[in-house]
Amino acid sequence: MANFNSNTAYDLSLFAPAVTGGAPAQKPVSAPLKPEIVKEKPKTKKELQLQKRRRHQKMFKVFTVIAVLLFCGGLKLQSEVQISKLANELAQETVLLETAQSERVRLSTKIETEYSFAKVQDYIKENGMQKTQSHQRFDFNALRTDKVTNYLGMPVQ
Image (cartoon, helix red, strand yellow):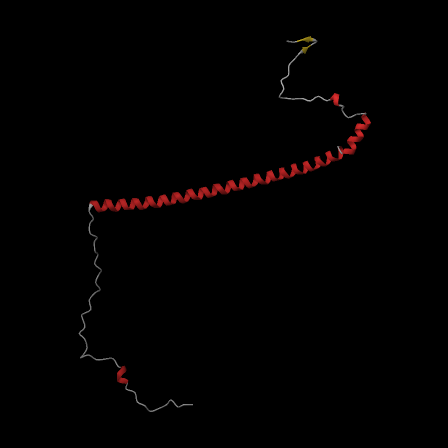
């Protein structure tokens, strides 16, 4: 290891406070001075009116912004209420729809079982029904005008 102890001399006078020709003259110590109150320059009537108008304009802007924010908040609240009501109605209608669909399935199944082709054929045979003949048919034309030619056994003109 290196030895840091050496006999080098330092000039410590460089670190001493500098002396400038003697002690400065001291001022007599007096009581602390009170701060001077400076009065504001009196404003003219025109300046006061202008200041009042600006204050009113700022208040109007603030109240307008508050009113707009309240209006927007009310609209948001109202829309949330409407969405909630519509969601409840949708849920009720969905339940009704599901009920109607299940009823439709039940009735269609019942119709298919009761009116199957084989059952209809059996019913026709049991009751002695026959297919219609060509002379038994009557073709109805709704566009053709009908006339009464015989009423209660008497000809009508």
